[in-house]
Image 1 (cartoon, rainbow, N blue to C red):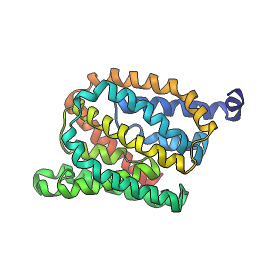
Image 2: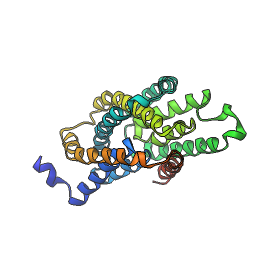
Image 3: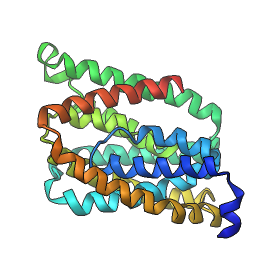
Image 4: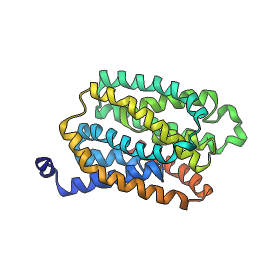
Length: 254
């Protein structure tokens, strides 16, 4: 472990620690800030290592989120969505098998994800004028969201803004939002473990980095839990829309 500690610079470890803190906060208090984690970990540890490192980090945060907010989950919403997410995950697994986690793949995919989120945002804001048939949570919207989110989370860990917009369109109270999104990501992230393992992404080095970053995640989940009650329902709803939009723009330009 001491060899690993000296393999990276202090700046890299600080960046990794900051990413870990954001993972925790995003899981229990401020969904959306986690979109920055993908870029931060890639800069800290490199592309392939960061991919392997991020999934266990997310799952650790998910465990706390589910433990604290599980009773608020809206399972009827998840049951409608999850089958389509699994279709997307399967498609993402095939894409990983044949194309890998190449920079070219992400360069093509991320702007598409960002564009989809912005379209969902516009449909949500114009919901009263356009009617329910074009809402993100309509039947067609549920299919599109599920497949896109499953594919995006498998290939680039970038499904956060998609799910935020989907649930925001339902105008859930903040605790229902947190409980529903906590269960969603916990279940989907677990399904990705065998896919990533089959690709040989997990290594001794990546798992040791997870050990180093775990305290930052644990600190973050407590910070997030402290923050959530301090948001009014209106402020929380507005923050979700703003962070989803910023996450979409970040995906399109990074």
